[in-house]
Image: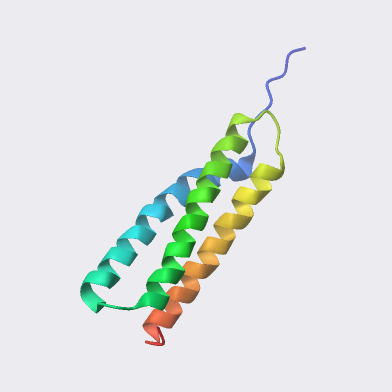
Length: 99
């Protein structure tokens, strides 16, 4: 019996969300630089989150191409969650005008 293995459920959801958030982070960095001048800490945090989302997207793509779940799948998820934490912290700090 020839069974086709299914890709990981996590990577299927992480891939489009992470790739979208890369663009969102780059938009936030651009808007903050144009409107607020020098807010280096805020743009640095969001830029790091953007890189985390980019690497997460790459890992999710690799995991989708594999036959079974692997460590790459877990890496994609953890990088995605780390990026979400950074963006959330950045948003709170920006709203509180700390950064």
